[in-house]
Image 1: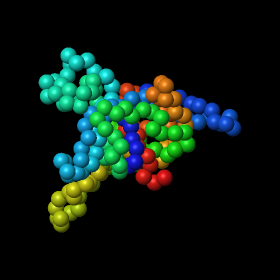
Image 2 (image 1 turned 120 degrees about the vertical axis):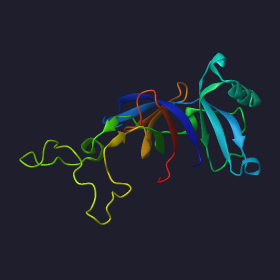
Image 3 (image 1 turned 135 degrees about the vertical axis):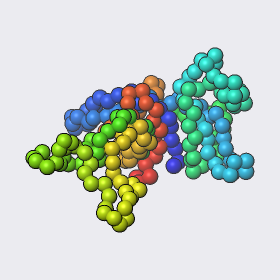
Length: 210
């Protein structure tokens, strides 16, 4: 990725384009993000920058993190994310990344943590169909059905779609268009939905498929 920024999902709304068409958008509070640490190939084996987002009271920061922020002379931040950008030569510790790093019309990928749904059955989790509700199936019509083969291989294969925990996963939505950028209010509006609940942390970076 060439550029990226960390932000917070505010919610969804709608805007109108030049032709008067309604465009559903997700509003993201993007930055300002401070560069807390710079990792180099000489010291760390790879190049990346660690950025912080969201101010935090100094009284709530742990002792190790206090030293980490003090070393970079950066105010304490709630969220730390590492961004492996292609070129970080022009970036230094203390630099600020703002919402205007992206422009209207650009394509971005957005990564976040999806909403947790708890323990879910196969119908909700994997879109299975119900079993027939006539004689011989009950008493459960929403279970997963037969799980394995017969005496060979006498086991259930790994990766079998079964009931279990749904959501709370790292999800990336690709090729979302940037509809509006407000650098003064640190707002980026992207077309469509992005992963996670309101208030969830997301990372925007230039689209890999654009």
